[in-house]
Length: 304
View (cartoon, rainbow, N blue to C red):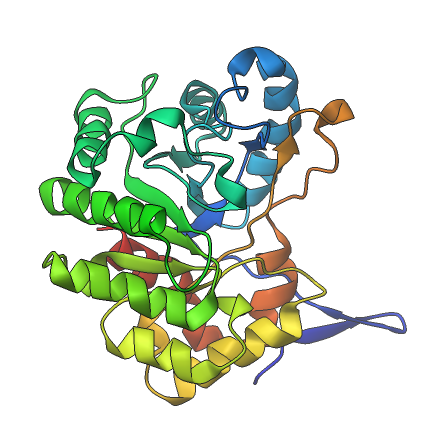
């Protein structure tokens, strides 16, 4: 069956599903877009964020989720100490990241990036991987490009991520503005540096409406991530997954919600979206045979 449903009185509803051992590869707890010079921990109450996020993570755990990748990058609110605290309190493993984010009009790019080479930046990422960040070891590299064609800064950040990946083995999750052409251009950078395409994750691939780019990146050996899944986007996300499956590329697909988001600067953090719609609303739209592949096998292979 393509859809699991049950009837409550006269109401037709989808049955939430549990996927033991599942991993959400692109979510957030806290984000601060004040800019690299201003986004510091003194701008928010960590106890308040903890109180808001903890029940959302506990709710998620009940669906079988064992790990959440917190994708907020350095200089935009990365809060490893808070993640460690929530991990200990909820039993959901939380992974943080190293790297520099080049999108959002360069809000997360510190001044030193202009003077340093890609090799210098890579050394910074490797140092964080070796020493840890506030009690957590970064488990992936988070970067971003601002569009296509890639600007020199975009190329530098991708080069730095590739160099650090070669030394650490960490995968690269790249927020990609510019759609498929920008993703393919990043793969060209990795190829030039002899960094395997299998280390590259095209974040926000659902923004590209031409499936031929999804196929191209997957056949190159990289990962295609359809995140931002919500009730309003479920139809398009379902089409993306089914299109890839029909071409034998399901094992190159990642899915997630890009949810959470305590917004620093907004009262009470604004509207904090929980992490369970993927289980309660989206997975029931897909064949049950795909669930383990999408939420257990693929995340563990992509971030191995």
